[in-house]
Amino acid sequence: MQQKKKNKKNPFWLLGSALVFILAQGKWLIGLLKVGKFGGVFLSMLISIGAYAWLFPWSFAIGFVLLIFVHEMGHVIAAKQKGLPVSAPMFIPFLGAMIMMKRQPRDAVTEAYVAMGGPVLGTVGALVVFGLGYYLNSPFLYSLAQAGFLINLFNLIPIHPLDGGRIVTAVSRWLWLVGLIGGLVLIIYHFNIILLIIWAMFAYDLYNKYIKQRKTGSEPRAIAASFLIPAEPLIEQGYLIPGEEHKRELPFLTYSDLEGQQFVEVNWEGLNFHGTIALGRQALIRRTHVTRLERMKKEDGLYLMLHIQVDYEPFENDKYYEVPTASRWKFGVAYLALAAFLYGMLTFVQKLSQALPGL
Image (cartoon, rainbow, N blue to C red; front, side):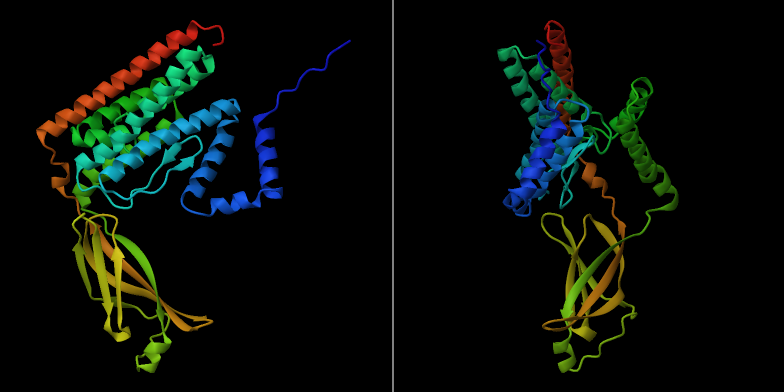
């Protein structure tokens, strides 16, 4: 009698079943995704797991995404230690994950410290997986640990926006040139489309920063902000409301707080308006002006939507890169030691894996 072959369940069947369950029976789970910043993290993790499951078994996809999560949490912890507000990790399939700094670091040392947090904690996470694999003699965990060591080593390439490019900012900016040449060599001998995109962006950024800018000067930039103002109190007080296409320059005052965050305070006395706009970086303000004035009717009355644009020129502060010699050595030694350790672990795990029958 022939036995029926046992069908292996495809990971997408499992993900599909889970999705059907959520839609049919677990609407409260969808509600949870809308509560707090961790909802978006969880959702992007699920999407990434599904994407990686196209290439790997679902169990490996889950473990891989969790290792990336540990890496990103290293950045979050380091940023919190330095008092920098950051977003929760957001996962991007096949590109890893990222966090957004809500305020730029004050100096290269802070930038390097935050960048170093990811590979350090990520390496610890990969070591834990390796330890479990060694204890259980598990080919699967060896493979997962190897992937963890690899993604952390890859991130140490001295190219922006990879962690290595930010770490060497506190060592020597000449190492960016090493990353530029070394990255090109890697692309030629071990072609990787993701590395090619990152390298091209880095090369273009260096060109703009050190070649084009010195020839033409900094290009002006702009940031826009909108403010909602109750209109009826203004009308009652006799203020004249301009038309929607009204444009004018506004007086402004700019200042920075103790953390280095720059603000632009704009005023329009004709509408009794005072507003504050935060800049993402230090800049020279060229002008602030009204681009549009919308009238909006709501249930509780008439409102004005005031659209303001701030034109500015980024201010490159060379003091940002002034790093004490002791700190340069500290980050340099830590960077090289971590890279060497990760490479050594990759080689070691590969040899162990080859000795196992499961790999």
